[in-house]
Length: 118
Image (tube, rainbow, N blue to C red; front, side, top):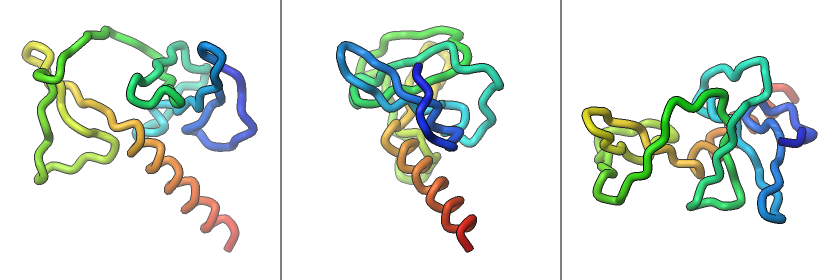
């Protein structure tokens, strides 16, 4: 992970993968939490958005799932950055919407910039 000239907590840098540069979004900060002091240890490249990746501090487990394991949140439930739920045994795991997380990060940064210039 190479550092990028950015003050954004959500954007720690860029990564090179198979001859392409990827924008890396720091997951804890993008979800509204606080990122650790150390650089993230893990980077996951999203198959649906191969130009972007997410960085995170800890990976407890991973699981390959099929479309039949994905359940919609419905129109009643709106969680920023979460697209659906994945059924994993007895667990319901949020399926993140990388595009929404990036847009949310951009909106938050724009709001900060507007507030800072007044």
